[in-house]
Length: 88
Image (tube, rainbow, N blue to C red; front, side):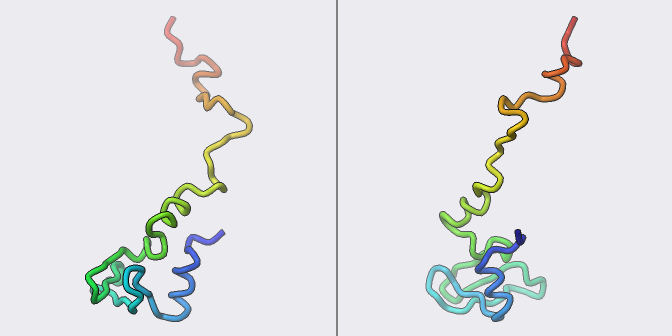
Protein backbone atom coordinates (compact mmCIF):
# COMPACT_ATOMS: atom_id res chain seq x y z
CA UNK A 1 0.00 0.00 0.00
CA UNK A 2 1.37 3.40 -0.96
CA UNK A 3 1.05 6.61 1.03
CA UNK A 4 0.28 8.34 -2.27
CA UNK A 5 -2.99 8.05 -4.17
CA UNK A 6 -3.11 7.26 -7.91
CA UNK A 7 -3.49 10.90 -8.96
CA UNK A 8 -0.49 11.95 -6.87
CA UNK A 9 1.68 9.21 -8.37
CA UNK A 10 0.60 10.11 -11.92
CA UNK A 11 1.29 13.81 -11.28
CA UNK A 12 4.72 13.13 -9.79
CA UNK A 13 5.68 11.03 -12.80
CA UNK A 14 4.40 13.52 -15.39
CA UNK A 15 5.21 16.71 -13.46
CA UNK A 16 1.69 17.99 -14.19
CA UNK A 17 -0.90 18.55 -11.47
CA UNK A 18 -4.32 18.97 -13.08
CA UNK A 19 -6.99 21.17 -11.47
CA UNK A 20 -10.09 19.20 -10.51
CA UNK A 21 -12.31 22.25 -11.09
CA UNK A 22 -11.28 23.40 -14.59
CA UNK A 23 -8.75 20.87 -15.93
CA UNK A 24 -5.84 23.33 -16.29
CA UNK A 25 -2.32 22.61 -15.09
CA UNK A 26 -1.74 23.84 -11.54
CA UNK A 27 1.45 25.39 -10.21
CA UNK A 28 3.06 25.50 -6.80
CA UNK A 29 2.19 28.57 -4.74
CA UNK A 30 5.73 29.18 -3.44
CA UNK A 31 9.17 27.65 -3.02
CA UNK A 32 7.93 25.32 -0.25
CA UNK A 33 5.88 23.40 -2.86
CA UNK A 34 3.18 22.36 -0.41
CA UNK A 35 0.20 24.15 -1.99
CA UNK A 36 -1.00 23.95 -5.59
CA UNK A 37 -2.83 26.90 -7.15
CA UNK A 38 -4.72 27.26 -10.41
CA UNK A 39 -5.51 30.33 -12.48
CA UNK A 40 -9.23 29.63 -11.91
CA UNK A 41 -8.72 30.40 -8.20
CA UNK A 42 -8.80 26.82 -6.93
CA UNK A 43 -6.04 25.80 -4.52
CA UNK A 44 -5.28 22.60 -2.63
CA UNK A 45 -2.58 21.25 -0.35
CA UNK A 46 -0.21 18.85 -2.07
CA UNK A 47 -1.02 16.09 0.42
CA UNK A 48 -4.74 16.41 -0.43
CA UNK A 49 -4.27 16.43 -4.22
CA UNK A 50 -6.44 13.73 -5.77
CA UNK A 51 -8.48 13.28 -2.58
CA UNK A 52 -11.29 15.74 -3.13
CA UNK A 53 -15.01 15.14 -2.58
CA UNK A 54 -15.95 11.46 -2.29
CA UNK A 55 -12.36 10.42 -3.02
CA UNK A 56 -11.21 12.16 0.16
CA UNK A 57 -13.72 10.20 2.24
CA UNK A 58 -12.77 6.91 0.57
CA UNK A 59 -9.05 7.49 1.17
CA UNK A 60 -9.56 8.41 4.81
CA UNK A 61 -12.08 5.67 5.57
CA UNK A 62 -11.19 2.81 3.27
CA UNK A 63 -12.45 -0.74 3.81
CA UNK A 64 -8.86 -1.74 4.51
CA UNK A 65 -8.92 -0.04 7.91
CA UNK A 66 -12.52 -0.16 9.02
CA UNK A 67 -11.68 -0.17 12.74
CA UNK A 68 -12.97 -3.69 13.32
CA UNK A 69 -10.79 -5.75 15.61
CA UNK A 70 -11.61 -9.43 15.24
CA UNK A 71 -10.04 -10.25 18.60
CA UNK A 72 -11.93 -7.47 20.41
CA UNK A 73 -15.34 -7.02 18.76
CA UNK A 74 -16.78 -5.11 21.73
CA UNK A 75 -13.97 -2.54 21.67
CA UNK A 76 -13.13 -3.08 25.32
CA UNK A 77 -9.91 -1.65 26.72
CA UNK A 78 -7.33 -3.70 28.59
CA UNK A 79 -8.32 -2.10 31.89
CA UNK A 80 -12.01 -2.88 31.35
CA UNK A 81 -11.25 -6.53 30.65
CA UNK A 82 -8.75 -7.00 33.48
CA UNK A 83 -10.46 -4.74 35.99
CA UNK A 84 -7.29 -2.92 36.99
CA UNK A 85 -9.01 0.47 37.24
CA UNK A 86 -12.05 -0.65 39.21
CA UNK A 87 -12.85 1.29 42.33
CA UNK A 88 -13.13 -0.82 45.45
